[in-house]
Image (tube, rainbow over all chains, first blue to last red; front, side, top):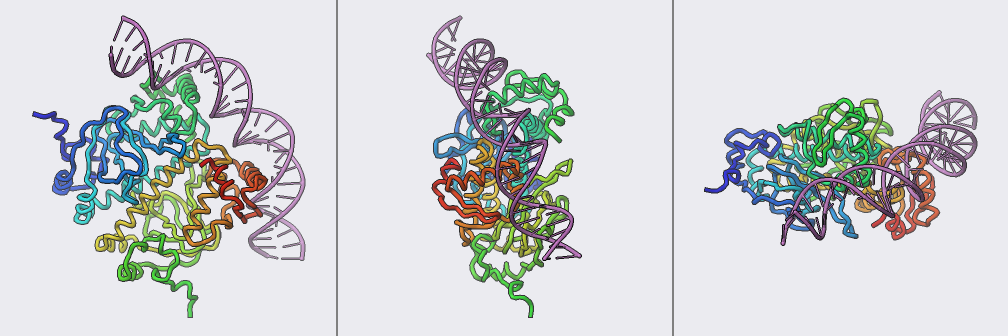
Amino acid sequence: MANLSSHIHCQDCSMSALCLAQPLDADSMARLDTIIQRHKPLHKRDVLTAAGAPLKFLYAVRSGSLKSYTLDDNGVEQIIDFHLPGDLVGFDALADGKHRSFSQALETTMLCEIPLHSLDELAVQMPALRKQMMKLMSTEIFASKQLLGNLNNRSAQQRLAHFLLTLSQRFADRGLSGKSFRLTMTRADIGNYLGLSVETISRILSALQADGAIDVQNKLVEITSFERLRDLAGH
Amino acid sequence: MANLSSHIHCQDCSMSALCLAQPLDADSMARLDTIIQRHKPLHKRDVLTAAGAPLKFLYAVRSGSLKSYTLDDNGVEQIIDFHLPGDLVGFDALADGKHRSFSQALETTMLCEIPLHSLDELAVQMPALRKQMMKLMSTEIFASKQLLGNLNNRSAQQRLAHFLLTLSQRFADRGLSGKSFRLTMTRADIGNYLGLSVETISRILSALQADGAIDVQNKLVEITSFERLRDLAGH
DNA sequence: CCAGTTCCTTGATACCTATCAATACAATGT
DNA sequence: ACATTGTATTGATAGGTATCAAGGAACTGG
């Protein structure tokens, strides 16, 4: 008998609240479930999508995490986003049917694979699904534009505090602890994403700890004072 | 007889190539045209949408330009985007039916108004329209994430050079001159958008001119060397 | 056409963060 | 268990950009 975890259905998935399945009634969810396949687990550093490759599936993260990034002309990595359980990967590729970014597992990661063609057919018949897709895309549009503004005019400390609060909120939305969590990405990844150097990330994590806002131990972060952290994020 | 410009149809609109209408055949376009209304012209500083207001229409910019922005807790403006002719305004509001940002005309601006409800109905019947909406949203997702990366790790000069090149490309895509154009936003707006101070914008425009990359006269910009400008943008 | 206002430019200084450098720590696989 | 590699911390210095300050230019509305 195969591993149970590869047989989870949308109906039982703890992430369905954030997924495409969210607004669907039982029947619709069952139909969505029939087209969804479980992807074999990714290991740390495995690449899921490569820029330029044709888009065949949308992926939903069930557990683990990924980073997505582009490579510039000089092969320099630019991290665009981190994906947590419940997130959908591949929206940026819908435009022209080709992936625009790479995505790589930051740890062992389980995925649902949604064949694009079948999804499109299903969307015709199910207005709620169509709406949910629009909603998720719309949310992503606003979030990334908002982020741009939030980072651009802020100090390194504000950026990092904001980053930690956003992560915390995302974990909480997923039913996980927003108070203490593991940073699955490296300091360098965070720095790349926030436009700061590794050293600055390291220094500011120490500073935030000295300020009593957080407690860092290697990859583990505990937010000891949301109030303090929010103050430092400038909200 | 009313002003002709308020009677333009999708079929004749020079912006249709970038608009929702782009992939539609003549018949479909005619049907789209029936639900689209012409909005009365906005004057400079008129506000089109306010954060929190219910979303009733998507807007397509026919001529002129707008900025969209949020206001933080302290009432500080954070510019999120500039909208040029052919752009659609309102995608960020699809998620929960409420606008998430303000948008304000930077000059006299003409708009098409697309009732959301009718658009949804039409989208059910017209796969090409549905696809185009997805495509536009997907493009916007990638563009804003890409921008984030492009700005975050770059110097003030690189950011501004990149900004000018992007503007130039957008004008060119719209059949306008990408070589010389008018900045309809203020230096302060650009600085806000790029995360730089007004003074820095001013200084660097002068520097780019001294470098022979551009020619600035007040709001008017002429790109005298794309090659030079691209070098300075770091691509 | 003028007064008032907004917008833009330029200069001097101070602060923040990148960079360089060295060391320490953690993870990985043999 | 150890060596190797990748990752993280901390310090010293230099450079870039914000800020403060002042004057000039370009709009705006009466």
